[in-house]
Image (tube, rainbow over all chains, first blue to last red; front, side, top):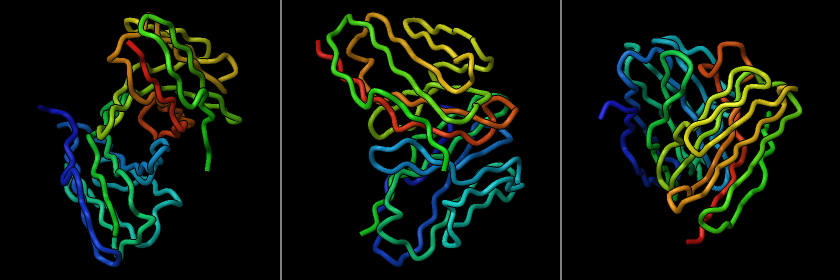
Length: 111
Length: 114
């Protein structure tokens, strides 16, 4: 399967813990996006990269969140000091031209 | 932040019926996209629209990019059980088609009764 992959698919953590998610985009896709989706809502944009450069961050991305794409391939999204409000599905997407292809997401539950 | 107003929120239809849903915005979007999401999975692209007035089909699906660039609709003809899921509209404001950050609607949940 050469689609976007995300790891882990599910993460349960206690409030205050740090978590890190990984996204592997489709090979040779130069743009990579992170979105967050809460129950009953559509995905909301968090940040995106072109190669290793982070081009834009939304206001949703508080200072507890950090994303990296060190070699322009896979990306990580870290949440420090998790809060219950961080519980959501975190989606990654990638594109080479016009179409964003989404991964299956990582579902985070903060207890 | 910006939002797309998607309606209806949910639909219950009989197998074989046609379905229509739409999406509106107070802002202009230069690209309109329609995605379908199954439970526990990421959205899958159904149709992409890049030009005002454009009408595009993909099998039983037809979508149109509104002439004002502030709305779009999606029609599904002769629905089947596997059409069940949540349908999202998404828009991109920046030039560059679909490779800039997307704004999504809240989704239309479709249930098909066999």
